Amino acid sequence: MNRMREVTIDELRQLAEAAREDIWTTARAYGREPKIYLHWSAGHHFQKFGDYHINIVGDGRIYVSTDNFADVLAHTYRRNSGAVGISLCCCAGATTNDLGDEPPTPQQIESMAQAICAIADGLWLTIDCEHVMTHGEAADNIDGIEPHEPYGPQTTCERWDLQFLGTDESPAYTTDYDDPATGGNVLRGKANWYRQHK
Image 1: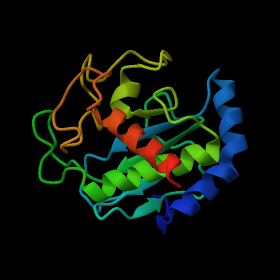
Image 2: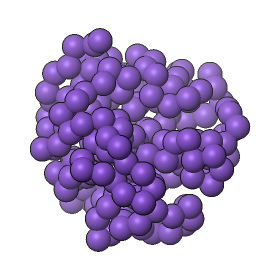
Image 3: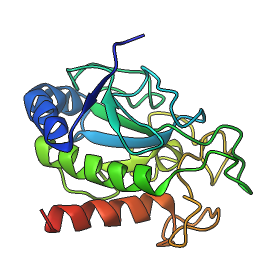
Image 4: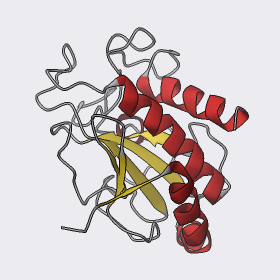
């Protein structure tokens, strides 16, 4: 397993800036721009995994598993090259009806939004669904890139990470990606708010 270390939002931005050229070069080789993929680990609030560049634990602290965000890690099936994976450490035992005893915490949600903003700033990316996607959205290829058969909420539901957050803003599971209450739409909205209020 890679060595985890705690970082600040500013350090995330610096790591993204340092990897920008390599990430863009790799993404262009696949005929696209870089991506940021958002996950939950389906583990416990303080259980971190080396499959993701960034792990956000239950109290909102942020850890990186590598100091080179251009490293290709195994976070999103057939979409790992030229991409950064961010995971909330949560949702052990979650179902589409119940996020279980360890749902995303408010601290995790805000930290993820700030992390999205920092990575997008460092990589020069727009914070939109073309560049920042949940694993559920990516699994259903909603960006029009089709490196695999769909396996998300609208199809097999094999992956549905962050389809809802269990909060007032995102209370329930839905397969409608245009619904402003999906986890992806809420997180992108929060990240854009942080971008505007730096």
